[in-house]
Image 1: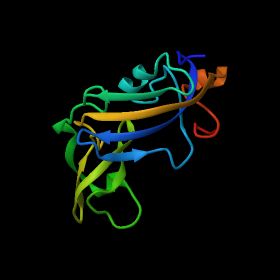
Image 2: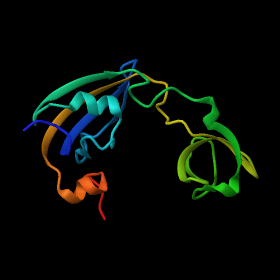
Image 3: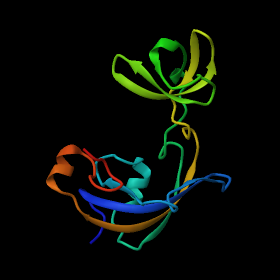
Image 4: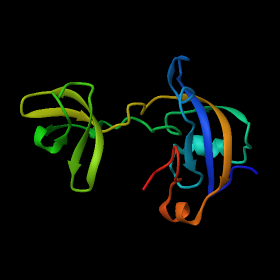
Length: 160
């Protein structure tokens, strides 16, 4: 069996920046899981996994555009603190939720004031070329409910 649309794929990964610094790894825990073809992971990585088999090891280099995209200046702004959801004392570097007219959105606080905060809506890795080392652990055909919901269910996937 190979990774194709509507495959549920479990994989371990190491993520490196362009300087070879390890940014994160899944190897100490459970493998990551996603529904192939449902845009659950970054597009460049999903495209690289297409056609791979269980046991495959891939080294995938992605440009910023293939990974989390270019940084966009318009996603940096000052907002009233009342629009942010967070616990504890608000401080620079915190990941918080911003209430918008289109729902909640994850943002990073770049400067915290008494009544307002400067935030950045870019993904923290936006603008960076990345390298993944991926080991495909296993895969299976998605259940109809997973396809309908657009994501994998079960351990490591989305639970209802």
